[in-house]
Length: 331
Ligand code: FUB
Image 1 (cartoon, helix red, strand yellow):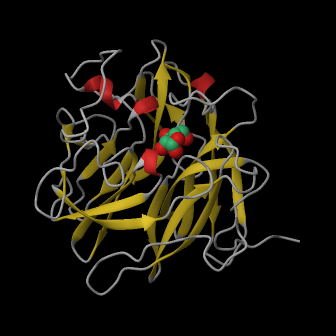
Image 2 (image 1 turned 30 degrees about the vertical axis):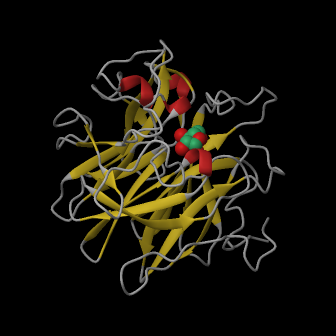
Image 3 (image 1 turned 90 degrees about the vertical axis):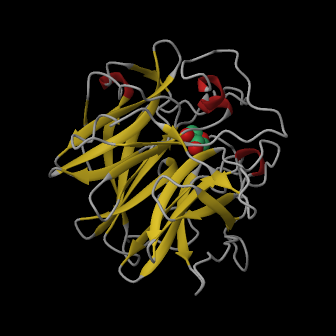
Protein backbone atom coordinates (compact mmCIF):
# COMPACT_ATOMS: atom_id res chain seq x y z
CA UNK A 1 0.00 0.00 0.00
CA UNK A 2 1.29 3.51 -0.77
CA UNK A 3 2.26 5.38 2.38
CA UNK A 4 1.00 8.96 2.72
CA UNK A 5 3.25 11.51 4.41
CA UNK A 6 2.54 12.22 8.09
CA UNK A 7 3.63 15.35 9.98
CA UNK A 8 6.68 14.82 12.23
CA UNK A 9 7.46 11.43 10.73
CA UNK A 10 10.24 10.70 8.21
CA UNK A 11 9.24 11.65 4.67
CA UNK A 12 11.08 8.53 3.49
CA UNK A 13 12.66 5.64 5.38
CA UNK A 14 14.51 3.75 2.63
CA UNK A 15 17.39 6.26 2.72
CA UNK A 16 18.62 8.80 5.29
CA UNK A 17 18.05 12.43 4.33
CA UNK A 18 18.92 15.75 6.00
CA UNK A 19 19.12 19.54 5.56
CA UNK A 20 15.84 19.86 3.61
CA UNK A 21 15.35 22.86 1.32
CA UNK A 22 11.69 22.83 0.29
CA UNK A 23 10.15 24.76 -2.61
CA UNK A 24 6.91 24.75 -4.54
CA UNK A 25 7.70 24.13 -8.21
CA UNK A 26 5.13 23.24 -10.87
CA UNK A 27 2.41 23.07 -8.21
CA UNK A 28 4.15 20.39 -6.11
CA UNK A 29 6.44 20.42 -3.10
CA UNK A 30 10.02 19.54 -4.00
CA UNK A 31 12.51 18.83 -1.24
CA UNK A 32 16.27 19.11 -1.83
CA UNK A 33 17.98 17.26 1.02
CA UNK A 34 21.46 15.96 1.76
CA UNK A 35 21.74 12.18 1.45
CA UNK A 36 23.25 10.70 4.61
CA UNK A 37 25.22 7.49 4.19
CA UNK A 38 25.89 4.48 6.40
CA UNK A 39 29.48 4.26 7.72
CA UNK A 40 31.26 3.61 11.01
CA UNK A 41 33.75 6.44 11.02
CA UNK A 42 34.07 8.55 14.18
CA UNK A 43 32.31 11.88 14.66
CA UNK A 44 34.21 15.10 15.33
CA UNK A 45 33.69 18.88 15.45
CA UNK A 46 35.00 19.15 11.90
CA UNK A 47 31.93 17.28 10.63
CA UNK A 48 33.96 14.46 9.04
CA UNK A 49 31.06 12.11 9.79
CA UNK A 50 28.93 13.94 7.21
CA UNK A 51 30.61 12.37 4.20
CA UNK A 52 27.79 12.47 1.70
CA UNK A 53 28.38 11.80 -1.99
CA UNK A 54 25.19 12.50 -3.88
CA UNK A 55 21.72 14.05 -3.85
CA UNK A 56 18.28 12.49 -4.17
CA UNK A 57 15.35 14.83 -4.73
CA UNK A 58 12.00 14.16 -3.09
CA UNK A 59 8.57 15.42 -4.08
CA UNK A 60 5.02 15.44 -2.75
CA UNK A 61 1.92 16.37 -4.72
CA UNK A 62 0.52 17.85 -1.49
CA UNK A 63 0.50 17.08 2.23
CA UNK A 64 -1.90 14.20 1.78
CA UNK A 65 0.09 12.19 -0.74
CA UNK A 66 3.05 9.80 -0.83
CA UNK A 67 6.61 11.08 -1.07
CA UNK A 68 8.47 10.20 -4.27
CA UNK A 69 12.25 9.68 -4.35
CA UNK A 70 13.40 10.69 -7.84
CA UNK A 71 16.69 8.80 -7.49
CA UNK A 72 20.22 10.09 -7.83
CA UNK A 73 20.18 13.63 -9.22
CA UNK A 74 23.89 14.44 -8.94
CA UNK A 75 26.96 12.52 -7.71
CA UNK A 76 30.26 13.99 -6.53
CA UNK A 77 32.15 11.87 -9.08
CA UNK A 78 30.48 13.93 -11.82
CA UNK A 79 31.51 17.29 -10.35
CA UNK A 80 34.97 18.13 -11.73
CA UNK A 81 36.06 20.49 -8.93
CA UNK A 82 34.57 18.62 -5.91
CA UNK A 83 36.28 15.90 -3.90
CA UNK A 84 33.91 14.98 -1.06
CA UNK A 85 31.17 16.01 1.39
CA UNK A 86 28.15 17.06 -0.62
CA UNK A 87 26.45 19.00 2.19
CA UNK A 88 23.18 20.96 2.41
CA UNK A 89 21.88 21.97 -1.04
CA UNK A 90 19.19 24.32 -2.32
CA UNK A 91 17.41 24.85 -5.63
CA UNK A 92 16.00 27.86 -7.49
CA UNK A 93 14.04 28.35 -10.69
CA UNK A 94 14.88 31.04 -13.23
CA UNK A 95 15.52 31.38 -16.99
CA UNK A 96 13.26 28.31 -17.56
CA UNK A 97 15.78 26.17 -15.67
CA UNK A 98 16.34 24.72 -12.23
CA UNK A 99 19.60 25.54 -10.50
CA UNK A 100 20.87 23.17 -7.82
CA UNK A 101 23.31 24.86 -5.44
CA UNK A 102 25.54 22.68 -3.28
CA UNK A 103 28.60 22.93 -1.06
CA UNK A 104 31.45 20.43 -1.27
CA UNK A 105 35.16 20.35 -0.52
CA UNK A 106 37.46 21.08 -3.43
CA UNK A 107 40.70 19.13 -3.91
CA UNK A 108 42.44 21.37 -1.32
CA UNK A 109 39.82 20.44 1.30
CA UNK A 110 38.22 23.91 1.11
CA UNK A 111 34.43 24.15 1.02
CA UNK A 112 33.11 25.91 -2.08
CA UNK A 113 29.64 26.28 -3.55
CA UNK A 114 28.80 24.74 -6.87
CA UNK A 115 25.86 24.89 -9.23
CA UNK A 116 24.26 22.36 -11.55
CA UNK A 117 21.29 22.81 -13.88
CA UNK A 118 18.32 20.83 -15.13
CA UNK A 119 15.15 21.37 -17.12
CA UNK A 120 13.28 19.43 -14.44
CA UNK A 121 12.97 20.17 -10.69
CA UNK A 122 13.74 16.51 -10.00
CA UNK A 123 16.92 16.44 -12.08
CA UNK A 124 19.19 14.89 -13.12
CA UNK A 125 21.41 17.96 -12.76
CA UNK A 126 24.44 18.77 -14.89
CA UNK A 127 27.24 20.43 -12.89
CA UNK A 128 29.34 23.37 -14.02
CA UNK A 129 33.08 22.74 -14.46
CA UNK A 130 34.03 25.07 -11.62
CA UNK A 131 32.53 26.28 -8.36
CA UNK A 132 30.94 29.73 -8.20
CA UNK A 133 33.84 32.22 -8.30
CA UNK A 134 34.23 33.91 -4.91
CA UNK A 135 32.14 31.29 -3.12
CA UNK A 136 33.22 29.55 0.07
CA UNK A 137 31.89 27.82 3.21
CA UNK A 138 28.60 25.87 3.23
CA UNK A 139 24.81 25.77 3.25
CA UNK A 140 23.73 27.90 0.27
CA UNK A 141 20.13 29.09 0.32
CA UNK A 142 18.75 31.11 -2.58
CA UNK A 143 15.85 33.50 -2.19
CA UNK A 144 14.23 35.26 -5.17
CA UNK A 145 12.48 38.46 -4.19
CA UNK A 146 9.24 39.76 -5.72
CA UNK A 147 11.28 42.12 -7.95
CA UNK A 148 13.09 39.09 -9.46
CA UNK A 149 16.44 39.77 -7.72
CA UNK A 150 18.05 36.56 -6.46
CA UNK A 151 20.23 36.38 -3.36
CA UNK A 152 22.40 33.56 -2.08
CA UNK A 153 22.91 33.25 1.68
CA UNK A 154 25.60 30.94 2.99
CA UNK A 155 28.11 30.19 5.72
CA UNK A 156 28.72 27.83 8.58
CA UNK A 157 31.08 27.73 11.57
CA UNK A 158 33.50 24.94 12.61
CA UNK A 159 33.47 22.26 9.86
CA UNK A 160 31.82 24.86 7.61
CA UNK A 161 35.07 26.91 7.76
CA UNK A 162 33.50 30.40 8.08
CA UNK A 163 36.07 31.40 10.75
CA UNK A 164 38.84 30.82 8.22
CA UNK A 165 37.61 33.51 5.81
CA UNK A 166 37.68 36.59 8.09
CA UNK A 167 40.46 38.24 6.08
CA UNK A 168 38.81 37.49 2.73
CA UNK A 169 41.20 34.63 2.00
CA UNK A 170 41.39 31.14 3.49
CA UNK A 171 43.57 31.02 6.62
CA UNK A 172 43.65 27.42 7.71
CA UNK A 173 44.40 28.03 11.40
CA UNK A 174 42.17 31.09 11.92
CA UNK A 175 39.88 31.01 14.94
CA UNK A 176 36.54 32.70 15.57
CA UNK A 177 36.08 35.93 17.55
CA UNK A 178 36.30 36.00 21.37
CA UNK A 179 33.05 35.52 23.29
CA UNK A 180 32.63 39.27 23.95
CA UNK A 181 33.19 40.26 20.32
CA UNK A 182 30.51 40.42 17.60
CA UNK A 183 29.68 36.99 16.21
CA UNK A 184 30.58 36.14 12.64
CA UNK A 185 27.61 36.76 10.40
CA UNK A 186 26.40 34.72 7.45
CA UNK A 187 27.17 35.98 3.94
CA UNK A 188 24.79 37.24 1.27
CA UNK A 189 25.51 37.83 -2.40
CA UNK A 190 23.15 38.94 -5.12
CA UNK A 191 23.28 36.61 -8.11
CA UNK A 192 23.68 37.81 -11.68
CA UNK A 193 20.92 36.99 -14.17
CA UNK A 194 22.85 33.84 -15.12
CA UNK A 195 22.15 32.58 -11.55
CA UNK A 196 25.69 31.16 -11.55
CA UNK A 197 27.87 34.11 -10.57
CA UNK A 198 27.86 36.74 -7.82
CA UNK A 199 27.22 40.41 -8.75
CA UNK A 200 29.76 41.48 -6.15
CA UNK A 201 31.81 40.09 -3.26
CA UNK A 202 29.58 38.43 -0.67
CA UNK A 203 28.80 40.76 2.25
CA UNK A 204 28.42 39.84 5.90
CA UNK A 205 24.88 40.12 7.25
CA UNK A 206 24.24 41.84 10.61
CA UNK A 207 22.04 40.12 13.13
CA UNK A 208 21.20 42.56 15.92
CA UNK A 209 19.71 42.19 19.38
CA UNK A 210 16.66 44.08 20.65
CA UNK A 211 18.90 47.13 21.42
CA UNK A 212 20.36 47.30 17.93
CA UNK A 213 23.70 45.78 19.01
CA UNK A 214 25.30 42.91 17.04
CA UNK A 215 24.83 39.49 18.62
CA UNK A 216 28.06 38.42 20.35
CA UNK A 217 30.08 35.30 19.59
CA UNK A 218 29.49 34.07 23.16
CA UNK A 219 25.72 34.36 22.79
CA UNK A 220 25.46 30.78 21.57
CA UNK A 221 21.69 30.56 22.03
CA UNK A 222 21.19 33.31 19.42
CA UNK A 223 24.26 33.79 17.23
CA UNK A 224 24.44 32.41 13.67
CA UNK A 225 26.07 28.99 13.23
CA UNK A 226 24.80 27.50 9.91
CA UNK A 227 21.67 26.60 7.88
CA UNK A 228 20.64 30.04 6.55
CA UNK A 229 17.13 30.36 5.11
CA UNK A 230 15.05 33.38 4.04
CA UNK A 231 11.30 33.65 3.60
CA UNK A 232 9.14 36.71 3.11
CA UNK A 233 5.96 37.19 5.09
CA UNK A 234 3.73 40.29 5.03
CA UNK A 235 6.48 42.31 3.34
CA UNK A 236 9.15 41.48 5.96
CA UNK A 237 12.23 39.33 5.41
CA UNK A 238 12.69 36.47 7.86
CA UNK A 239 16.24 35.20 8.18
CA UNK A 240 16.27 31.85 10.03
CA UNK A 241 19.26 29.71 10.95
CA UNK A 242 20.71 27.11 13.27
CA UNK A 243 22.56 28.07 16.45
CA UNK A 244 24.67 24.91 16.08
CA UNK A 245 26.21 24.28 19.49
CA UNK A 246 22.92 25.09 21.26
CA UNK A 247 20.84 23.27 18.61
CA UNK A 248 18.00 25.75 18.01
CA UNK A 249 16.52 27.05 14.79
CA UNK A 250 15.98 30.77 15.43
CA UNK A 251 14.93 33.75 13.34
CA UNK A 252 15.55 37.45 12.88
CA UNK A 253 13.42 39.91 10.87
CA UNK A 254 14.39 42.79 8.60
CA UNK A 255 13.09 45.23 5.99
CA UNK A 256 15.62 44.32 3.30
CA UNK A 257 16.77 40.96 1.89
CA UNK A 258 20.32 41.70 3.01
CA UNK A 259 19.44 42.90 6.48
CA UNK A 260 20.15 44.08 9.03
CA UNK A 261 17.95 41.54 10.79
CA UNK A 262 16.75 41.86 14.37
CA UNK A 263 16.67 38.69 16.44
CA UNK A 264 13.10 37.69 17.31
CA UNK A 265 12.98 34.17 18.74
CA UNK A 266 12.98 30.43 18.26
CA UNK A 267 11.41 28.54 15.39
CA UNK A 268 12.32 25.01 16.44
CA UNK A 269 13.51 23.44 19.69
CA UNK A 270 16.51 21.08 19.56
CA UNK A 271 15.81 17.78 17.82
CA UNK A 272 17.29 14.32 18.33
CA UNK A 273 20.85 14.50 16.97
CA UNK A 274 23.48 17.27 17.03
CA UNK A 275 22.50 19.20 13.91
CA UNK A 276 19.34 21.17 13.35
CA UNK A 277 18.60 22.39 9.82
CA UNK A 278 15.35 23.49 8.22
CA UNK A 279 13.48 25.37 5.52
CA UNK A 280 10.21 27.31 5.58
CA UNK A 281 7.80 27.26 2.65
CA UNK A 282 4.26 28.31 1.85
CA UNK A 283 1.99 25.78 0.15
CA UNK A 284 -1.50 27.01 -0.73
CA UNK A 285 -2.65 29.01 2.34
CA UNK A 286 -0.41 27.44 4.97
CA UNK A 287 3.24 27.60 5.95
CA UNK A 288 5.37 24.56 6.65
CA UNK A 289 8.66 23.85 8.38
CA UNK A 290 10.84 21.10 6.95
CA UNK A 291 13.51 19.84 9.36
CA UNK A 292 15.41 16.67 10.19
CA UNK A 293 16.19 14.53 13.18
CA UNK A 294 17.90 11.25 14.00
CA UNK A 295 14.91 9.41 15.46
CA UNK A 296 14.79 6.75 12.73
CA UNK A 297 18.46 5.82 13.18
CA UNK A 298 18.17 5.75 16.98
CA UNK A 299 20.14 8.99 17.44
CA UNK A 300 23.10 8.45 15.08
CA UNK A 301 24.15 12.00 14.16
CA UNK A 302 25.04 11.33 10.55
CA UNK A 303 21.91 9.29 9.79
CA UNK A 304 19.11 11.81 9.74
CA UNK A 305 15.57 11.86 8.34
CA UNK A 306 13.63 14.76 6.86
CA UNK A 307 10.24 15.57 8.38
CA UNK A 308 7.73 18.42 8.13
CA UNK A 309 5.18 20.15 10.30
CA UNK A 310 2.95 23.20 9.98
CA UNK A 311 4.46 26.56 10.97
CA UNK A 312 2.29 29.41 12.26
CA UNK A 313 2.92 33.15 12.26
CA UNK A 314 1.15 35.11 14.99
CA UNK A 315 -0.82 38.26 14.17
CA UNK A 316 2.16 40.41 15.18
CA UNK A 317 4.37 38.53 12.70
CA UNK A 318 6.25 36.46 15.27
CA UNK A 319 6.57 32.71 14.72
CA UNK A 320 5.11 30.14 17.11
CA UNK A 321 7.99 28.01 18.42
CA UNK A 322 7.72 24.37 17.40
CA UNK A 323 8.50 21.43 19.68
CA UNK A 324 8.07 18.49 17.29
CA UNK A 325 7.90 15.97 20.13
CA UNK A 326 5.20 17.66 22.18
CA UNK A 327 2.08 15.51 22.33
CA UNK A 328 3.57 12.97 19.98
CA UNK A 329 5.25 9.58 19.85
CA UNK A 330 7.59 10.65 17.06
CA UNK A 331 10.84 10.54 19.05
O1 FUB B 1 24.67 17.86 6.57
C1 FUB B 1 25.96 18.40 6.74
C2 FUB B 1 25.91 19.64 7.55
O2 FUB B 1 25.27 19.37 8.80
C3 FUB B 1 25.07 20.75 6.96
O3 FUB B 1 25.68 21.42 5.90
C4 FUB B 1 24.83 21.56 8.18
O4 FUB B 1 23.86 22.54 8.05
C5 FUB B 1 24.48 20.48 9.17
O5 FUB B 1 23.13 20.10 9.08
